[in-house]
Image: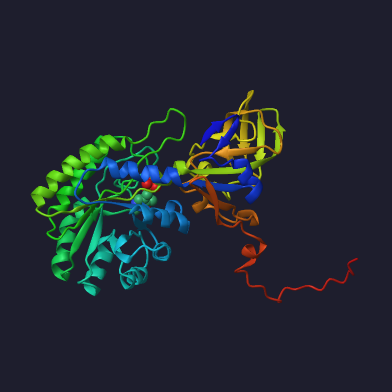
Length: 419
Ligand SMILES: *Cc1c(COP(=O)(O)O)cnc(C)c1O
């Protein structure tokens, strides 16, 4: 986003005009930013075979899935519904990897029927799967027991985590493989979000490569994701270029030793789409209290829950007044819960009716939205080559009522004749 002559612009498009056209609150995504992030990853890793699988749970709009497909990405999915979305967006089954956790065996069977790559993350399911589908090669998700990032909600590789098969259980995995005849075609790790330390990542990679060596039929090794993007001014992101160079060197040595052109795979979500997204909402009330000035917006945790759920920081700015005197505001929502987007944020002086913008609204924002308080989910707009495209309509009362089944059992007769 650029500030040109006191007007914000996303790839040449004025967000205020978008809000006028499509209504507020509104999600807006910049396709060029997603493309740039994808290319940055592709350029960072210099190996014979590289696959970037977009972790679509971050943002599941079909047009965004198609965009990544057109760039050559594969798809990382965590539910059978996401698998269906991927197929609908045009991915072929082999380009989709299904990485579920604690799902039913029936859901895995549905994935087999669709022919997608399957990543299994516990030995109980691995055994059942091997018994039933000995000829359907799978990937195993390994928990390398390394600690990545600072937030335990998003660190999924440590010892208490529910994700993955422990490195200490590899002898059991080998016994299952032997007794069922199942082939292990891939090994995978995903240690959670926000990896800043390249060393930690390399440690995990080393563990995974050592495990891969013990299986003779490996065709891909998936190092997951956890790439950090900047949220605040001055935040550092994962040094993808440094990581790329060091992982590539190590991986190229590995494939020489292994004697086969194994594919190197990653599955970023946040890294590809977070910074491409903006969320815009109108200020309903400016409320001075004894302790602070609240800016109450026409939205809430129903549309953007990350600040309340993870304590994530989203930069908030006044789109209607890019320049001028700044004051401190606590930005809150309209939900009947405490839904604070940001405390004591320095924002250019807010007048009721102004539009506020939120950065980093591409990943886990719309995807986590709900109808709480019976509110409609917002529309989504994609900007591509200076043009805006409506990619999801705002909901209506019909959507709220869609699955409600109304019975007459509690109907009351209203004796009062209404005027
Ligand atoms: C969520 C998820 C990702 C993506 O994580 P980001 O932090 O958004 O990059 C990748 N792999 C798996 C298995 C996931 O569950």
